[in-house]
Length: 69
Length: 371
Image (cartoon, rainbow over all chains, first blue to last red; front, top):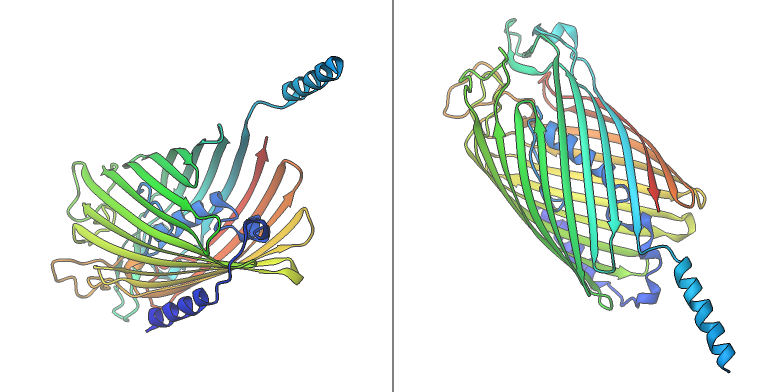
């Protein structure tokens, strides 16, 4: 049910998309709008949660494992 | 006329020689400390109640070698000490299991190296990554390919896809705190991961990205240091993530929200919601508070002591049903070529009586230098 609701929200958001010319994308190019504003910190958080929780993945390439227990 | 033409040529030549050779490089370093809370002494049957204390050093080099080629190098080195839960026991028969911990302090080191090369062809980036992780009892070799296609004049901004493989070798060190099967020779674990994602520009101030990933693991998946663990030798997992970015112009702040739904064939389902507010206090000072909520269901074969029957069994808290909250703050100070970073986070988990659930603090300082 939760994923169905999320999917509907996404569809509504995409329906509201307006065309943006390349010269209008200055704000979108800011660091604060990036998918990761600190890749090293994100890599560490991903490693920690992989070790301490029962879930993983969803962030792109999986990379190698570890013996973290 | 001839004199003016020679002057122009001389000026252009001089200017070209004064330009630096083509390069755009960034070197980054982070030091982090990870510290788990101790287990309450009254909840330890035997062994040490001191949990993990880990120091982590991360190095990164990113270099644009030319218009078409980029190079990346990541090195992470960890030094770990502390005790680990071996199994659970309920000697008081009060329904609240306690922990049997490893007694002597574990000391271990891990080094992880990843090298990447990116080829940029017009609007498409192709990245090859090779990785190697080494520690006393575990080695992992990985390789991955990522493709990102960008669309400059469309609402559909990008499509991303990738494949990665990992071949892991487990060789438990000399320890008395082993699984009851006492793995006496090397075991292997292989994984295959695929993902496909797309990003859209909603308007001048907001974007959204969605990614679906699939991972299959095969081989020795049991924890060799958990006494009673008996896990399947195959695991299939799916993860769906959605990331949303919205810029609040009047506050000069970007709202960053990430959501992930995860499910696997061991019975674990989870939801993760993360939110950050990247706030520009000034041109050089950035405050980034963050918040994360996580909840998961238990694996089908997870049980606490009292019923260890069945083909598969685990009393590992990481496979139990629990939820977790974490909150943190990152501060960045930027100059022309250097960014200083300091951050801290507190993580708290709960949801059942398992004393193995962790609470921890992390602290990070670092620097990014572009040249």
